[in-house]
Image (cartoon, rainbow, N blue to C red; front, side, top):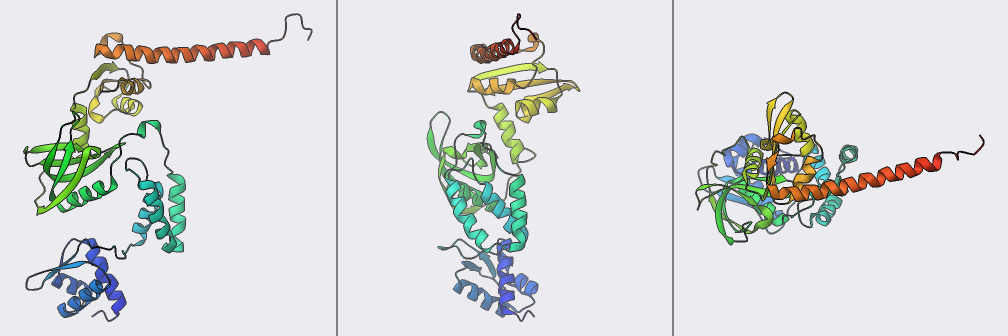
Length: 343
């Protein structure tokens, strides 16, 4: 039997944080104490502010639930390092999280053991975030993300208000499966119980998520994982502009140079691939095409209305190239000696 009360209490709290529900027998066995001792220790934790809910039964069950105040959390070394690094790099895609992350980091680093500080510093030094122009866009509310994440974890049916791309707003009821960050947009993968089908919801268009308290058995996702599902749905989504070409490069190279979704690039052979792009903004397609050789003109087709936008971009680049050429020519003229100058 564990006689050290503080150590036993910490161990009990650690167990409650690692799993949603524990039976009294399981906790007693893990700690080597009686059920009576577990009940007393649970009461002590409740007195300290930990919201622990009990369930009925022969042995009873216990779980941590949401409370009005946030009690202390127990973190092992790896968890503490992971949270510190995440807080230091928290940024894009979530509205107003930067200032909140700084406050939380200050509290964590105040109590972070000295032995862990070099690890945090080393990781941060080699994994610093770099803001880039194409990563800006709609941001998600951190409270909405937290609510949806909990619903995904607990397989809890949730209702929310959703605005479609066409501006139609309505109330939805769904079984949340996973959140996917496709920078800079967050997506919720969920099963819409009203439409009886899997759907993809943009979190920046989702408000007032409300868990119903009804938990369900997870449905099998029609994809290898949530990220693959999002990639497939985005690739199949209708768009104003499309572009297709057979490219003289292998599929891996084309994906890397165009930042295209996996389904948008298909291998023909070891040195040739097909590229299918689609976007409502023509500049997005133009930017993707800058990094590759498009190959023969007869393999290119798509939306004719895209052509003027590509021509405009090409003209801008050509004008910049001519300006640089003239600058280089003038520099060479200034550096050449006068014809009559005696050396």
